[in-house]
Structure formats: structure tokens, C-alpha cells
Length: 91
Picture 1 (cartoon, rainbow, N blue to C red):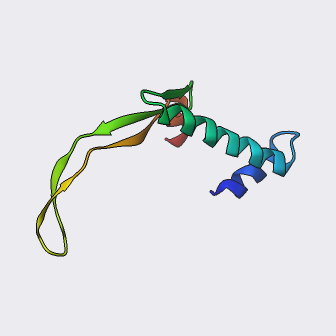
Picture 2: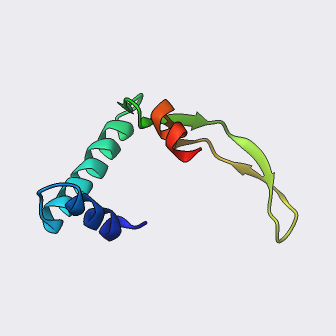
């Protein structure tokens, strides 16, 4: 499902227009991204899940083309942990 398809489904279940649904989706992504980029940010939606950031440590790797050893720098990544209700829906 893409953003447009999600907006269409939101319109079916509510009294908002498709353009309003797209604005809501965009606002949600912007707010979550802003909160997570602020450092130790965490966004929890009870029943749905939690978005949080993790710090990946620097590690050694190999260039698959040359086989040479390289250093993969540390980085922050986003992790999503599904909530209990979402897990139950997927089963």
C-alpha cells in the first residue's frame, strides 16, 4: 500500500476528503521524523507500536567487488517495534 492508497482507505472510514487525508499523512511523517531526529526521540502509539532510534556502532566489513576490508561508520537508524494489538491483527 502506498500513500495514495492509504489516503483512499482513510476517506472510506471517515468524513474527510482525500486531500485532507494526504495532509494528515504528511503531517504525521513530518512530526515523527522531527521527533526522532532530535536525539533520543521516541514516538509511541499504544496498540500500534513504537518508533525509536538506535545507534549502530562502527564495524568492519568487506567490499564485495574487491574483497578489501573497509570500515563501516557508525550511524543512527530508525526502528519500529509493533504493539500488541498490531501483532494480533497480523497473526
